[in-house]
Image 1 (tube, rainbow, N blue to C red):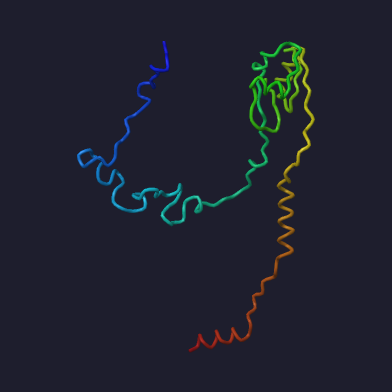
Image 2: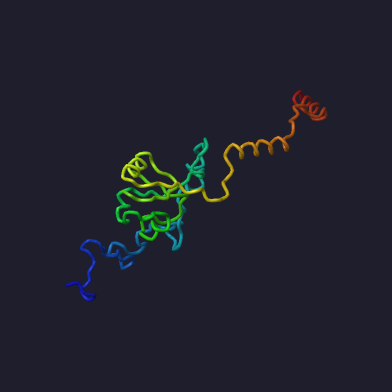
Length: 190
């Protein structure tokens, strides 16, 4: 029988600690596997991820192009029809009951049902799930979108940026002052 006094870790899950600085004959004495001097040999000395010794790092050498829509992506909590079998027939399934039964957790924009006489309140439902639920005699109620501040669309942001650029833009003149032009001509001849 398993008791507190005979608890043991699984065989092979714990490894012997490498003992450093225990004399030359140990194989890990003197510099303790850190080599001779330098930043990486010091205690507390480390180099951040991606640092290339002052050379322009790869992440900054590569060009960055295009627009990434990930910031505007809405994440939905996904619930499969099979998971709803634990609810009794005629029960109302909503966000609160799904959270209490630990079928969904965390932050999300809404709930999506994928997929028998249940009343379901969700934000999105796939066509196959809707067909199965209605065939089994259930009903689906799509929730009203909650009043939250939407982030501005990409087109609006681009228009604002273009408008700002036009206001602060100055025309470049190609002509030089006559004094500088004369100085260049005379210095070239001598």
